[in-house]
Image (cartoon, rainbow, N blue to C red):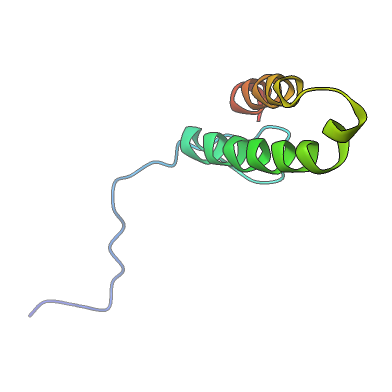
Length: 74
């Protein structure tokens, strides 16, 4: 007779890492967080900063640099 009450655990190890983000993340998590931040900063830049003079290219450059930092250190 087979005992079905024992829990079976899969031989998978979690490869997340703990950086400055408040959770364990993998590469895909950090890339998706960077994309969300990119979109949010660009939209905020278009609404509030661009009417004052600086072009949206500067905001996109800032977002790319921030995204690289998040993917590497996050």
